[in-house]
Length: 170
Image (cartoon, rainbow, N blue to C red):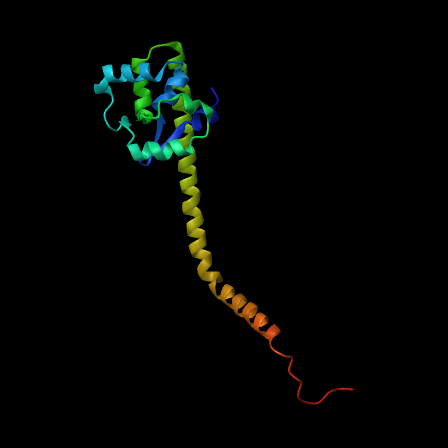
């Protein structure tokens, strides 16, 4: 399973990285109804931080962002469930097919890659902010002088040239 394919099925909802029930069902090669029935039979394994149902507004917003034709097959009145990384891991305990096991392994690896990139990106942003703060103070005067000269040059073009006063060399 390609990481890019899995990454495209991981969304950020309520500041959490989640996968939706219909995407998981497609990956596991089962119907969404079957996946949700298995979850309902094992509801105690899925606390709110593992799985939650989207609000009507969240679903409406997400649905407007979907462009794929496959969404036409889904009943849009049914609001999907979102599974966090822990929820997806818990699914491996209730779905015992070989496909489910292999897909779960791939999904867990994808979540690890995303987390790694997020950490690296955070470190990079922090270093960039430190450099900007450090050098903005030093170059602030230079930027101000350059802006002054540019403004002076612009206003000078609009004024008539003044006649030079004094002696001229011949």
